[in-house]
Length: 328
Image (cartoon, rainbow, N blue to C red; front, side):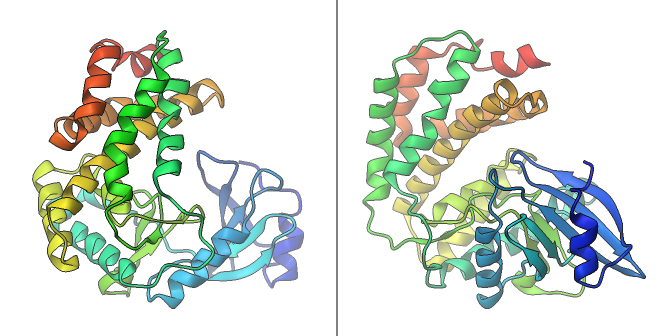
């Protein structure tokens, strides 16, 4: 977490000469974040180094979210060729840690999260976003047989896996709903509680550069079936009901919710295994027990029958836990 060599020059060019640069966070990508302090001011420096990263999608989505009445970091300065952005600092109060300290606020804060999605989904989707439909869902979920299964010593029926998921996801793709803006990483570590703001603006949004145009159930599943914290099942059911009532949705939407939750959780099992095996980030396997717990719950839904049958044929209870156990 050493700041990029050109950071001091970039900061000086934009009125932050001599600022202190402190490590703030890294993530699963090549992006890194630093807190910048100078004369009582503070901001966040994003380092998105080319050619691995491109900050332009982040800028475009941040500006669109602001226009849509939501809270995203303002872009204070930019050097797109070098992958540097200076952003508003939304503080340190993430939803995850807030609920760790005050679990009694779970319903209150998840109600705001659901209302935020209702508001977001009422906006015409941002133009120029990549589609996120059946082809993309199938490609994403293939990370499981490509990475997870080999990591636990299994050679599985990949064609049957894809056929099972096609049977489950094609009805979701063909349910006739218009696409909405999908943030894709809408979860408790990317939601900030920002002082002095209310309503949907109570939450500041992060890590939305991979936004796509897709199904309204996806981000709802992302926040209620969170890889990083346990959401009480009764709260999940209540928030699903809250969204359905606010958006005028019914049972078809609920079936889509469970199907896309299962798709996302299966993809994440593959992604976290890839981060372990390919990128030497074994700490991501710490999330695997939670992910399996969520996926097992998803597979119990009647709409997941073909996928449940595939898992029952190919993965024993031992193999469903082996990846994270081996890395511990």
